[in-house]
Length: 423
Image 1 (cartoon, rainbow, N blue to C red):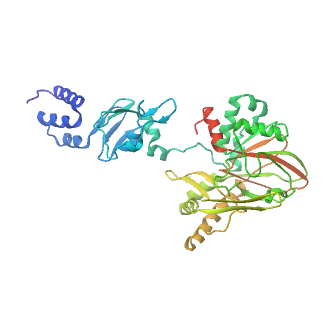
Image 2: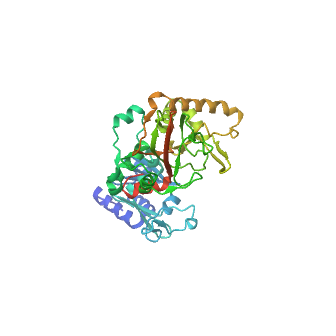
Image 3: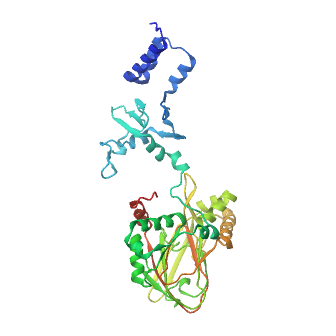
């Protein structure tokens, strides 16, 4: 067959593509006498272009170029994440498709794309439509490039210069926009304040419940304490406390901590706050090997309480730095030198290197320019991300009464998302 013009040739190619896909396209081009080397190479790689994206069906995965990203999707993953009505319930946001029923060697039989979507036809005839933006957002490459949660790393000067506003008690309790701004600050900086709260335990509980469910622990639902050493913990003294995270001896440390100083008749007692993520990032930038040790070597933290009224023995195990493995983003720091247990989970040829890494992190946490000192007073409620910000205090004199509680982290994030925050 002879073809007299390029336009006719391309029209036939498009027709053959629509009718029969890649195999018939190849056969049709051979019939047309299309023998250029570049054409043959293009056919062998099954490349498809549009103004929005470029993709090719490789032997083991689909390669997609879109939005400045080059992404790779296993075919089983693509079939498993079909969002058609038969595979996914959009009302409940739950999967209908039985993942175990997918053939592990499955591969699309046909494919096409337009400006916004990619379409794959599977061997059984099922057609899946993928939104290109959705694929980019949910690809491994997209997740690796982006943070799970926006944050601003800070030293004392950075936080002070930001002049982050406190929430007003009345608006905080009645206005969702005020609550949203408060949560946004808490997520960005790891700390946030509510001012003009009535100086009572009851009002503190109401403020906490506005944000999340309260997490009950062996310390109770709400705790109210002075320096009477009523519990087997240094917090129940007048001594200074170095920066630390709470409940490091839990398998899942408490997510958010709430503090309210109801009264203080004496001197001292300022609260110390340190951004643990800022310190961890410094270690990562300066000594990646130390960061690697702190994020992979598990150690124990332990709490033993043997009083007449309280009997508790808690053990939590995990690395000092918990990271997402795909991008090394720190999501939790577990640092408490008071409660760190015997190190018996680290082989002898790693121990010295672990101590070196721990020393570097400790040095960063204790740098004077990283220490934010806050004087808590009646009416000023402090919320702390206990997975990020370490707290401590200076020694004090006189009667100092604090109340507070822990919040469940999942429910804090749930509240934030329900208000439209991206977390």
